[in-house]
Length: 534
Image (tube, rainbow, N blue to C red; front, top):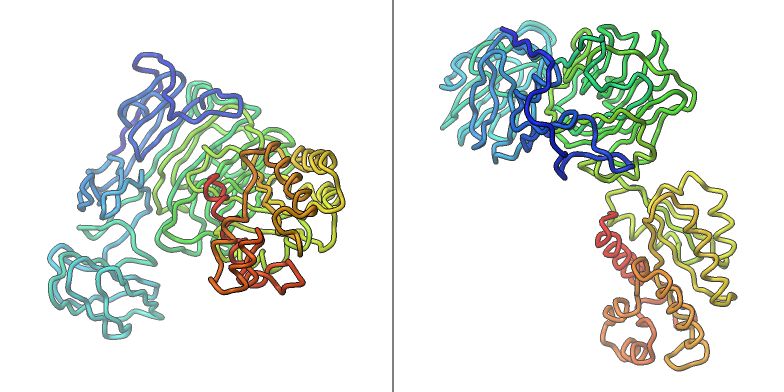
């Protein structure tokens, strides 16, 4: 059974709600489908139901069998043929649409598990179950299956495999490759969700022939096969005119491809991704300016490229199959090439932000390694001992690849007056195409005790930086003093307004030791987290 949904707006035109994605100019996307929250927008109209939105945009969905999914309570349920499945976890967390290929269940009576032997052909299989009991595999493969611990096995030829049930097993499944949704019957047909073409052979009304941006939020399948897993493809019913986002068979990397006239215009391998993980990707295009960003990372793309001429948008597969097998949480389209994708935080449910450090000797391997151990995003560091802030600015000017990254800076402010320091920071910050930067308070020089001439000059410089950048400076002294070990030396150093001696290389060297670097990294990390940049 297949449901044909014709084009034609229904409902009242209205201003888009705040949840609808916006481009860099503040304009709402042409359409935005949030399959998790159950809210939908297209061309000036909000739709309270998925079926209404599908009808408006001109979509066709088909599946020739019933299929399993988890309902609003997290329990397994069955969707009838021709019905989309809005899937959840066992804890009832929304995942969005689940889209899968033809699948086979190799166990009989899966909702009333009993010991059985099945003849299985050469292939890779997985067995999983729910309940407090277990299933023991024998006859070739061996292993004990329990809830949350599936067993994967590969057969080199036809084998009689015995599945011995023990205890309370409420349901079980044996299928090819990796776990999918539960099948109460022997087979489940493939899902097919296609938008377009409309009456003008475009994917939908409002499509731009020259430029656009597609945003996709999704969760990968629970495993990987040897073919691509296609999240979304905009094509002309062939692979010769297409824009696509997919998990590549080459190393399971997330990739984006644009093909025009059968010629690949761009196909960057963005990042290796894990199974069963939430991901976000934005793909933007126009002639000679195409790029993709994974979870907000720096754009990767092509500056010499032509735009294809597709007629439809396919969700969850492509020509020849290659089903996504995971879930799709959100899709949105804007009819313009949104610039600087990595700077548009709202486009990504998960943000992979690279961080770059610039400084003198304090930006050393010790601080870097301690900070890197705290971060879950990439960290690079450019620290040269003895370099002045002016010299750091000169190095920075030669590294434009890092200008998109969150920038953290530390410098001891020596050899410069306040006006030079402020002018140099302004020069460095001015090269950023965003406002994500932090200036970390440097250490305190040997002998620069409270009230000394050197300390007064040092504090005047730091206070001027704080006054110029009150929301982007990170005071460090109080935190470092809190790390005092309470001994005589540390107590005296803190009383003198210095870092504790236990955080320093020696009494004659104000650079941090391992303990000091760990503390300096922690206060830096806390500031990044507070800003939402880590």
